[in-house]
Length: 176
Picture 1 (tube, helix red, strand yellow):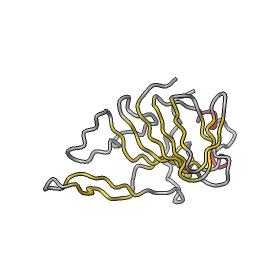
Picture 2: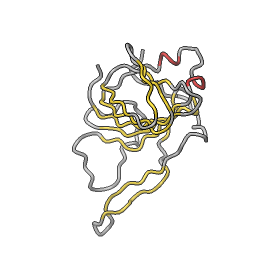
Picture 3: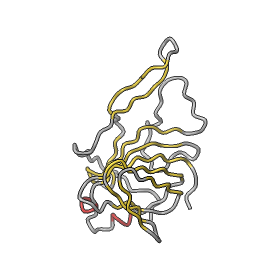
């Protein structure tokens, strides 16, 4: 069983209903003053599990700490999409989880969604409800709830009838 959530290898368009996010990035102007250097809809959106309404938006990725903030803007997202962050870095993303009935077709895709990442993850439910499913436990999280995921095997399950938005910060670490 793969450690990471299987991402589509086929070109599948993200559904128009998936929420898009405005991303603003600060930096310095030509005179060295702090300013917004980028203000646009984040383009780094990826379909998950071959389901157009199941998508993640990556906002920023960096390879190491401390982060070098001087110079040109580099969001670290030019390469292939990866679930885990760099070993000494982090990634910030939001995942829109459709109801399970939309993507779980009973052909085994659900079992392939069980994964662990080599990271410490901060998960904040922004909208809706979702279940964190672990081997020996499961808990429902609703808007405003936070889960600290410490490299353990898990699955996310949206048992409601509405999409759920979860913000994640993944910091490089180890899987257990």
